[in-house]
Length: 144
Image 1 (tube, rainbow, N blue to C red):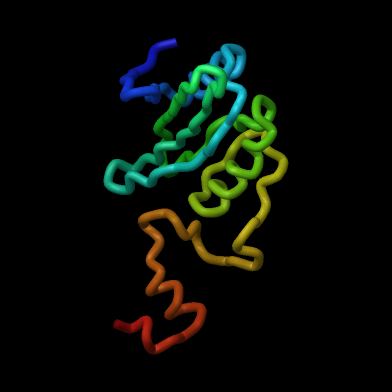
Image 2 (image 1 turned 135 degrees about the vertical axis):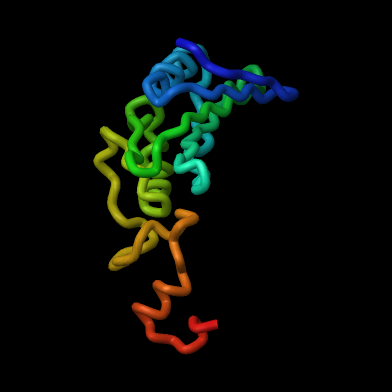
């Protein structure tokens, strides 16, 4: 598995390809990183990619690893980590709802905060909230 890495204090940063995302997670889980802290994403709209990342810790050694991968915005899909860390399901659910990224293998991908929402994923940088408010709520304040 090839990856880019850097270290700052007790945090290791790894950047892997989408194909190695789950492999990196499995290796970390097998090697004592039993605590998943978060899963989220960054929308690099100008580059047309999402950076999907997770942060894990080995509490015995006080070590942290952030693993990230880039995926195309027009193909927003990565494997779920929920089989390795059960709490991943909720983090992935939130990221799915807010960014529109599909976590393959996570059966919990349903609205968490935005029940009844019919707009685009609201944390995507190409989401134009003013246009959405004008269209849905017909509020004059959105004209500004």
